Amino acid sequence: MNTTSLHNIDVIMSFRGNTAEREENLYAVLRHFSQTYTDYTIWLMESDTAPKFNWHRVADPRVQHVFTYSAGPFPKAFLYNLGAKLSRCEALLFLDVDCIPNPSVLSSCVYNIMFTKNNDVLVPYFGAINIAGETKQRFVDNPSYDVFTGIDKNHLNEDSVLLYESSMGGAFIFRREAYIRVGGMDTTFIGWGGEDNEFFYRSKRLGIPWSSMDVPLFHLHHDSTHREDFNAKAIANSQRAYQSNIMPMDELQHIVERLKPFFN
Image (cartoon, rainbow, N blue to C red; front, top):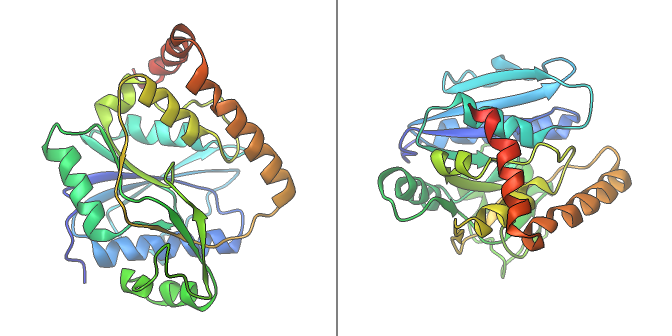
């Protein structure tokens, strides 16, 4: 039952339904929110040549669907920034549509950002676990966090593998004012990969420390339609993102000055 508060936070999700598996993951996560949490608004930011989101599969008035036309590579950074611009909430949860954080930890992190001045950003996990096979299907059929009981980085079952050792992207809560102050995501990153890393390096160097919680994030498995091309571009984007960790501060400030006018 939906008994966990998210303190009326706005959740920003970016979406392109380019495979049936990705669409299945999205609807499972949306149903998980509806069954688990009491108070939130989801900004579902879709970009494609035509909308694919099906309202009839969700029936949750807390989901706000925003569609933007794009025939090119997936513009995740732009969609995150657009969601942040449209929102008027003090705190924003940026969440990949195939990721499930621990509900109680997520609620505590949201409370910290919304009602204290202790942090500008919190990451509700450390390490991501990919879920496939029968375990994933059980979650799709009944999207309860209890499906993952007993699974962690040291106790994986036959359907789970450790996807990431640490945390970067996937799920993070940011104070909206601070997100805009450092320029948001760099929209020159197109396609998958890199934008999360670059944003982490840039915001951290600009004085915003990131703190992670020592619980895993669960990621619903999906295949890529063009995996070799995807991997090559993701690696190139990650290498480019690292430049924000080593470039001179004046160059980093130029990135912020280029990005901030979008939010005016």
